[in-house]
Amino acid sequence: RKEVEQDPGPFNVPEGATVAFNCTYSNSASQSFFWYRQDCRKEPKLLMSVYSSGNEDGRFTAQLNRASQYISLLIRDSKLSDSATYLCVVNIDYKLSFGAGTTVTVRA
Amino acid sequence: SQTIHQWPATLVQPVGSPLSLECTVEGTSNPNLYWYRQAAGRGLQLLFYSVGIGQISSEVPQNLSASRPQDRQFILSSKKLLLSDSGFYLCAWSVVGSVAKNIQYFGAGTRLSVL
Image 1 (cartoon, rainbow over the protein chains, first blue to last red):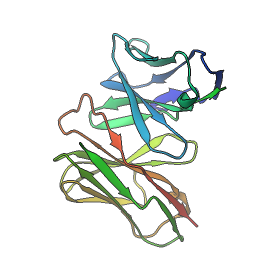
Image 2 (cartoon, rainbow over the protein chains, first blue to last red):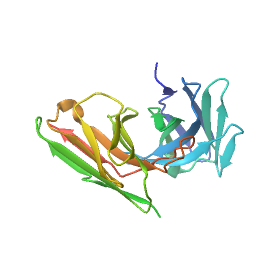
Image 3 (cartoon, rainbow over the protein chains, first blue to last red):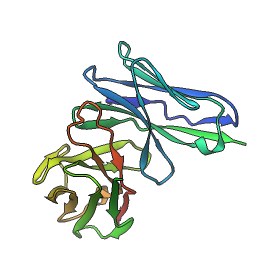
Image 4 (tube, rainbow over the protein chains, first blue to last red):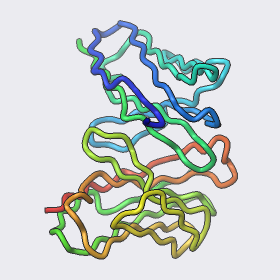
């Protein structure tokens, strides 16, 4: 079983739409959680950390459900520049485990 | 501010040739350092990590090795490349001591093609 599983998508949405997706993780000892964004052929960049209470960063909202071991990301008012692959990441000690990513394409 | 440098950006190597990829971090001391590989359409796979000079932990047995000769330098090597070594290699760093948070920052990556 993969440590982090994500729906690969793609999610094709029009500008202005809301898109949401999630991931599940297998290790209940995971300590911290993140969403990274990866553009085509580029390195991953931190989008946001995910906290148990849920947190927002502008148009992005992340939620964590430790009991069910899943993490979600919601993007409101999608922009063309939001087109990317979103990586779900969990941390245990020094090690990050990455999902394979969910691809989002925002169309004009 | 901290920066991470990785080179080369692109590399094409024949099977059986050696490999050396270098990563350096500026603006911080004693970082945790990591090497990942990303195969096409796949997630990142942790290859090695280091919490200090000369301290290397290997995650996956394979045709690669890593060294940390200086505090902010991390090198990925191979004596003989295989076709399966092709991929996108990424170096990353994080602040030491932040085990619970462990936010990692990535270099621009090296795209390796073994032919």
